[in-house]
Length: 182
Image 1 (spheres, rainbow, N blue to C red):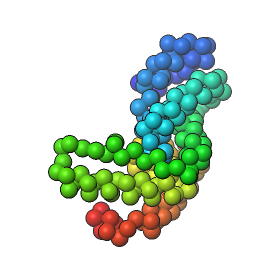
Image 2: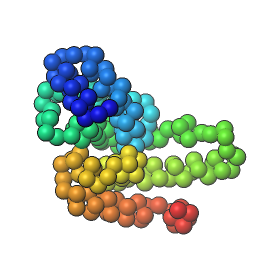
Image 3: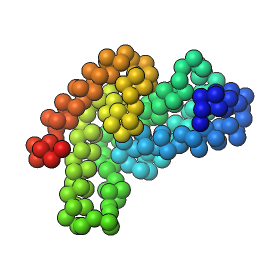
Image 4: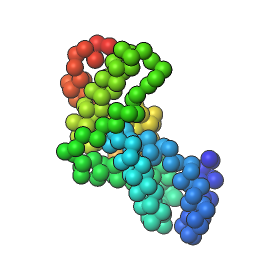
């Protein structure tokens, strides 16, 4: 979708056009789901967060400033929803191991991959929210530093600093055997 097409859909949404809203949801649903999943690490919760984020987006579409990038605004809503959920669920272990099951690999390789993913997920859960966000946006959503900076509206240098700190924390949390494998 081009920026012009996106702008037209946003303007139509501001006028209450449900069809335009449906098109925006179809365009960005997977992106928002993946972002939420990387923060909460549970498929069902990520689906709920995605739905809630789009509901808030639609309720607040009139407040969107067209001088900003839509994806930044949308990501911010989704991240806030995911972080709110994470705070509420902090004492529960919601890791979805079924997501990592694979019939295509040898059992020992699959088990090793599952253990690695579970360890990384556990480390991500122990990071502060700002660290989880920058790790998620950089390494799982593939955003550039400047794109990440637009989401929480912080300087690009702050993003780089937070990412460096988050990587150092991950390095300290991960077992030496995993660090040596990467």
